[in-house]
Image (cartoon, rainbow, N blue to C red):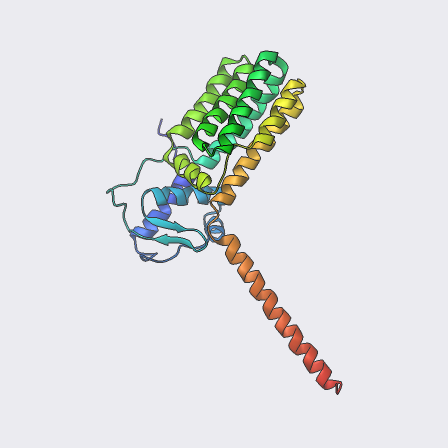
Length: 262
């Protein structure tokens, strides 16, 4: 069977073709993420994944606080790079699968495993303090894989390992991780602690909710870390609008005073 192209890959190919066809000139800024999402009827995370793919192919340059600019019509390497599972779709899959894994683990986890999870949290804490982010991320992976192991379900264990292997393999995930580290993202200690506390109580609903909350915040953190200019432009536009309205209101008030003979 032929694997259907991923949604973000379809968007990346369409944008790459538009660039190659001259619809966007070298040095021109692409439409905003919001505009692209509306044009292609997809989510903004999907657009973000497509932009990362174009960036890896050196077709665009992402400039924080400014936008996404075209720098080449064709990939300098001669062809587009390999596209793997998108980093945001990967995180969505992890949230779904690891949430249920955590709920099942709460029913089967052993005291020794709880102690091991707390030890991994301490390892992450130490690495975060020393700014050893790669080591902290390794402890993070072992933390999540240990929870999967606590389910005593070989299929769940394999699925969770596959998702983490996909993150390690995917060039798009590598680029997203680099952007996250550059913006100071680290494995969050409090969220991991809440997960283990729910497991220690053997509460499957609380464990599932804690894992969902953690991975939802991971998604939000990466979205914030890779925000280019839309928020800044929106804030600037809102500030300019307030300024104009304020000036217009002041002029109206002045005219009213003049009409009243003040």
